[in-house]
Length: 386
Image 1 (cartoon, one colour):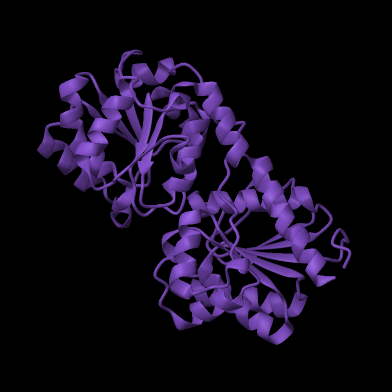
Image 2: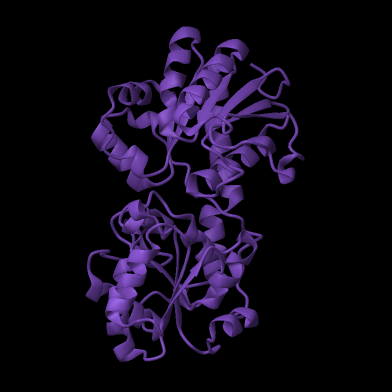
């Protein structure tokens, strides 16, 4: 098969990419961009479950058609999306289906059974752990390639689902290297929040959702009193919105932290880099993260970074080479490690070299590395189908 031929068609199944930006959505955009860059002559049909329209920024894409089911009532959206991806799959008979959400693979399995069309699936985090649904288990076992974003997720999939290791290959998250760079602390943010340039700031960027309390901001809040005993002017800032905010506000009040904690709420994408550069350390000691693009963004801004040692943060921080890994349940350990880092005593000199830290995270997780890894898998796939 001549895989550069215009006649070749890929179907890409994404939850959404335009109207909400979470980890899976950002990953899906990078995947589309990498495919476009690697094989610009292939025709891409992109199916979006929750989106309703394409944003102007994406009209530059060539050989790409978007299909939407976001206008369907929420109760009917799953069957509407399933009907669309299955119908177009049977009608157009693409050369390859790639899904960035595991739940969509059940439809891919049936298309493969009927027409022999191969399918790949990306496995991010919690949705890939403890899978019980028999139909989803079957679909996973028949996938031609499973792409976990972290070694942690890969190991869990292999252990829990008894998959063929040869069909489970890593394609870690990437990030926009042009957007995230070290700069001095932005003056307008210092003024906005009443902070001094020399005042140490801890930052967490996370969605404040009731079902995502594993992010670890609770633990940092509980560590702040201990940190204040050593660093009296410490300030903790949480960027993100969600329905867990009232509970967080209660914790802040209970601990008497109103004067040293800021809930910044939603921050536009174009300001996010400024918030990373406002902080002295980025900290998210989570225990349910599939990977965590925010770690990469903070590292690219040259910031010392702390994550949990029980999830995909292990990969994002490259097993401790790029940052500190802590027990996410140990408030005392979190406090002591943050103190150590802020006082310049943490035994990893790379964390205090912003430009070197940035270059290392680009080398390991930059878009070119992502594209090269994906290209190798596609080349192998095309060779096997010739």
